Amino acid sequence: MPGSLLAGALVGYEPIVGRSGNALAMRVTVELADRTAGMGALYRALAAHVSGGGAIAVRSTARIDAALAGVEPLESIWIEVPAPITATPSGRELVAALHRRGFRMVLAGIPPVPLAPELVSAFCLSVIHVSDDRRLACAAGPASSQSVARTLPFAQEGVRTVATMKESFARGAHAVVGWPTDDILRSHAKAGANPDYATIVELMSMIERGEDTVVMERLIRRDPALAWRLLRYINSPGFGLRTEVQSFRHAVMMLGYARLERWLALLLATSSRDPDMRPVMIASFRRGVLLEHLIGAGRDERVRDELFILGVFSMLDRMLDQPFEQLFESVHVPPRVRETLVERRGPYAAYLEAIEALERGPGVSLERAVHACSISLEQCNHAVLRALSAPDLIAA
Image (cartoon, rainbow, N blue to C red; front, side, top):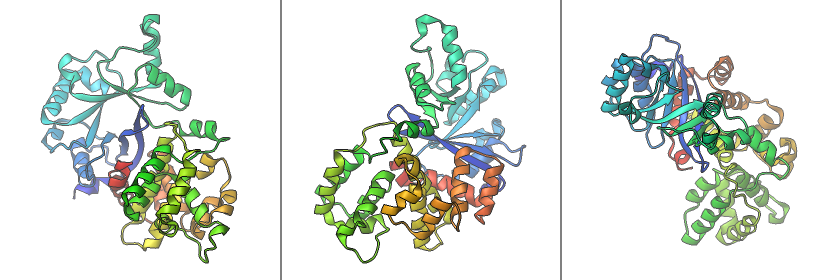
């Protein structure tokens, strides 16, 4: 069975984010229990669960060898090739053969010797650690202080602060691996995170076009700050509702288009145009989508909705610089969501820990968190792959 290779694998993920704040691909790290497995077998296992659309760049312990050339390549799966492979004749021949076969490849690290011209076109991107790139910049001297000459667009990994990110882009980086979320949230803490300007404008356009509430809900789900404000507004005393609204779609229906448009117009004045915050908002949305897939399609719809809300709101305390207990005084969320975020306990706590572990990457804490959810590693890995290629997430 193609997916069986994922039964004992540990998987982690992080976005590869371009200058605009949009993810170019998701970097998926796969640590296999079977150290003898080749990339061909792993590629088949991944292809069985990736629906296409969004790209994933696969970094793995799996061996890259000639057997991979016998697999049907997919546009949406990129293979990270360690740079030392390109330093040997057999390695160069393998890379050239995979390129002719149609595989998308990422060069991981700095080659020991310069790439031959015919190999440059084999890679769509290179990944270079920030510490290595700084050494290159210093070695290049003052004349090249703005940018080190490249033959490939490169993504910078190891970026942990906004200052380092800006420095990387100034040196010519095409993207960064991961996002300095903690540093960005610290810098926005006092002001608090506002809803995204472009999201509000698009919602107002949807109202003018008379879009269905289902379509509008999909957009609202992507912006945790907007979603939180919507629930707070609809459940405020002024509405006099007898029961609390805890669904974004229900909130849109209760407001009606006219009142929703007026509320959005007021929000527009304080909305955020900061591109640094966009990947943070998408990260929250990604958590919600992943939790939906982790729980599985066979579970109660209410549980799926609650887990989605849990994921979307899970970073809200740092985004708005308020503890969850204080935030939920004005917005009433499902009791199990509140219990998880305020007290870090209850039936959903293990799922939140699993999501956080997935973001940290393969390790003991991930395996422990997944087992606490009463699911197998294979089920978790399948859910991650399905979620990362979910149409809603790719559209975001």
